[in-house]
Image 1 (cartoon, helix red, strand yellow):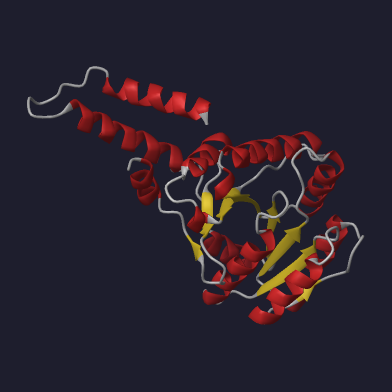
Image 2 (cartoon, rainbow, N blue to C red; image 1 turned 90 degrees about the vertical axis):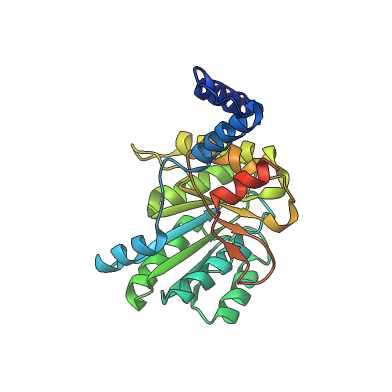
Length: 270
């Protein structure tokens, strides 16, 4: 995004002022090194989140850890929710899914299929119910059956759809999830940046609680399809201050990676 490109140039320029170069050092390689440092700084988020540690901390408090997945339509929320469920299972954490997309037909069945394949319980109440209430009941159920983590699936919604954004804000205010993950497509570049900033804005504006909740982390999907067009990751972290927690890079449950900042920077500077 233009604003970030400008900030990057300013940052590189500021770091070069007054630098003395050895006689055999090329200016271009010095600029490259400064650029690399600036990119690493931007991509290293203001806050880091250790999900596994936080899950164990919640367990010690005798409550389930709640992750809510939000994003626009068709970005792969349910699929990546299932991948994260699988990742948690690999770390011996018991998971329950909550089908709170009570809006899109087929959404509950889709989640049910993932739950069956992964052999984990699912809490569902069908369609046309208030998703905030379904999520609340799911969390209560998880407390009763001793699940460590509740993964809350929500309906895809466009960032300018006021009624659906209001419903999402209600779900987050009512249930205070530990983690709100924004699922965005790596493919759409700056569109994803616009979606993320508007989601954040709407959640802040529509919140009923005195401390408004915004996006805590980002899941970038379809990361295997983008070649070297990884600028969206940079822009999203810069605009929100939220870390890219995972990148989805394929169709199966194992196709989930942690974002490696150094690798991204190398790709950007090819």
